[in-house]
Length: 290
Length: 304
Image 1 (spheres, rainbow over the protein chains, first blue to last red):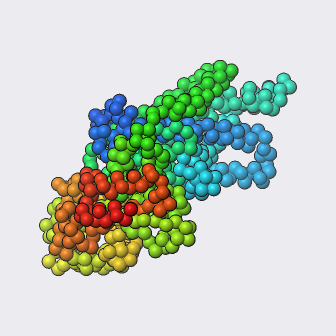
Image 2: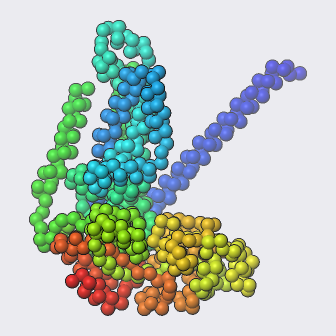
């Protein structure tokens, strides 16, 4: 005869294993979807991937077409976006967490706005970029205008992620620093930023990866679909990988779908190597802290 | 920390200096033509302009010709703002756009570069539709259309629900079709599947026995084995019927609009001459239909 407690325990164990199965199948499902996607892209694009594909300019002949200009454009745009967005984002987060009066209505309003901006669709940032950077500041359809637009797009994400990382710095560490008579700025540079660096880096890299995959806001500000030269300065016209890929997928000829897949592989490799850099940097900081 | 900062500074310096050095080492002009021609506009015209730019740059390596794809409307906006030299357009300029250009002091030249035959397409297994009249098309697509099944169009056709596919509302293709068939640009019934990507329409129609849709002839040409093309008013679209104008009203001209102020620049003038002289071959190569030879001569005369 089972007691009430035994029954109860059995029931809880059953619930536990059901949930286990449900959660496991969810992750299996997402991995299968990812693998399917990768399989399709690789089976279609791998044969088109070659050194000359990387170093050639786009062409109306799929056999001769390459992604040199789009790759260079992407690297330029993302490079500038990182230079603009990370210092601005981390700076804002430090101000909000360490300097601003948390209780004032002004800070609360700022917080609310940043959280809302993180959810604004990217095309809206494209329109903003078109009005402010392209027309008002006369940067025209340049890499600079594109990078600034993408900066606006990912800034809220970087700020929110950095804030979370800064919040997670244990207060005994900070207080220990203050107790030694160290100034606020020195505490930030010497204690808070190094401790929060892994979190800040993870957030920033995720945000930058998102920027790398954006096409819509850049089409809005007038990034070109066909570029046959490598950009030489931030004021040059440009195109980026996602636009070039989109452009190829919308062609009627099946060969263009294949080179689009090859372009996707290049974009994936670029994204993965950025993530790898982030992981290396993160581990470096984490080891130092431990 | 120190060494990392140092590395970053070195990298940044390199990134800033390298382009300057590279520019300085750049090759000398072979033909004397250099500069930038800025083009934007229709994604339908894009493949032709891209092909022309590719060939032109092959002959004049110091030219830079970025071609954008903001759509016909988006291209005209930039054109009116004076940001670009040439606008690709898959429909003629609208009255309000022409008025805005005038107000902004922009004078322009319209050049026709090729034809595109908008094709009405059904599924391969559709045995009953071979021909539609313009009136029947209007019956199907007009706003508030009563057509729900094939039988509603012709009583001898099956009593099965008709599925509609059309290009996205931002495209010149959509504007042109609605203008020609429904009499007003943008006027259309609401219950259709739309996509900015014509390949999606191809997939949709190929996989649905009761589907009907329309898109550019090039997309039919590439997917002939999967689709069936419908004659309009008893004329089947083909390069011949589109070129000689018997396929009507869905054969449409494709244009480029040139800012007259840009014509003073030698490189723009040369590019345009090259464009018209080679449009015949290049347009055909990327899937469009050439104009009759006489029309190209007329365009060249317009330029001079």
